[in-house]
Length: 76
Image (cartoon, rainbow, N blue to C red; front, side):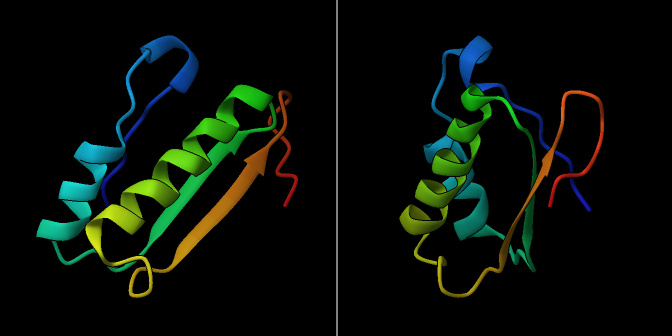
């Protein structure tokens, strides 16, 4: 397993292109996104969905999203 960390609000970079290359050039079994419940973390979902689409593997790589509260509780 590989862990990647990003913050769409603080990083000021759209990582979709770099992620799409990672997805396209490697045998990725699945992607699990753990995001906080705060609105700015919604950008991580959009970024990952775009990267999967750009890689051409959106249909092949299962994509799971888990949301965690500000207090550390898993919401879904």
